[in-house]
Image (cartoon, rainbow, N blue to C red):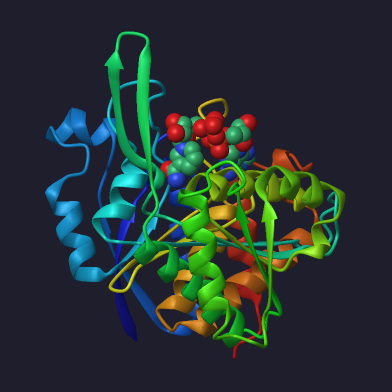
Length: 343
Ligand code: NAI
């Protein structure tokens, strides 16, 4: 029996429901493959502040320093004031510079496009998310967008290395360098320089507004999208719609020393506490996590069970046209795991 310590941040809103469901499904798969999980669980955000007086408790930080791998549910960020995003803070604290989001269809789920296979690689530490804002004089606010050669080169290299390793053929850097000539110009220059080291990967550049239109017209024209932080955030949600919505799309925040796996979606206050959220996005994030910690057999088992539940169409959640609860969906994935032929 192998044991992995994982830092678990359930999050808030639907985070409680989806992370509880995902832990059950991951443990069921581990029980079949001889993998044990030791969850080190911590709250973050408003709930952590109420209980411990800290938005990100020190123990949580120490836990990630130890385990180097986290599974995280969404955390609510107050709008137009209040504390800074916990998600952004964790990404910066652990230099999780690459946000990796594969966008793929699940079987038998009718969607706008049936064969999407896109990879979003988003710079995760700077851009407009630097959080440097101030009121110059009443009525005038300045917000700084930071773009550095170091971070731009690092994320471009991540995208090209991924392409090389996984035989992906094309990368588009997405920008607004016609307007932000210096900042987005630097991002593009770095991407171009890195691209020269990977002649087998076709490199292209598209302006972000055109990219939105191109994606909606024909997402198949793209393979890997390389984006700054804000553009990556927005285009991730757009692309999620191709394959059935935010309930499905996973993500990974990857650094040199540690990684935190979380869905693209947020805390969905409109459906929180009703046991109706779709845990697929966090489950698929957990599958990415299992591959990251070299537990491919457990990842494969989980993913195959998930696919069978989608093919059967009997226990799907409301966002994808079913009427199962979060719990019922998780139960049916677990039943599939338990009845899979032994390896
Ligand atoms: P959201 O992603 O929470 O919700 C957008 C829409 O998608 C809602 O209609 C929601 O019901 C639906 N949805 C999202 N996840 C779903 C799921 N698993 N199953 C079924 N339906 C789902 O985005 P919103 O409303 O803009 O943000 C809410 C809060 O979440 C904000 O405070 C925001 O800052 C935070 N947030 C946190 C993230 C994180 O922790 N990584 C990422 C994005 C937003």
